[in-house]
Image (cartoon, rainbow, N blue to C red; front, side, top):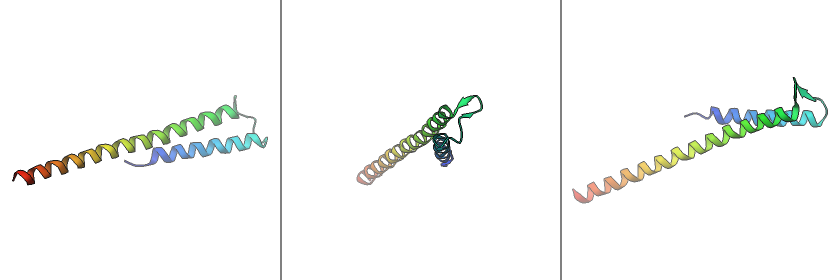
Length: 83
C-alpha cells in the first residue's frame, strides 16, 4: 500500500490555497466559466477527502493487523500450555 492518494490530496489542498491567494490578491477572478472560489473549494474538498480516506484505511488495516497478531499470540500461548 503506497501513499500516493494522500500525496495527491495534499497537492490538491496546496493548489486550493494557491488559488485562494491568487483570488485574494486580485490576480484571478475566474477559471474558465467558474469563479475561483468555487474551484478552490472543490479542489480543497477532494484533497481533504483523499487524505482522510487514506488515513482511515491505514488505521483500519493497522487495527486488523494488531488483532491478527494478538490472536496468533493467544493461540501460540494455548499451544504452549497444552503441549
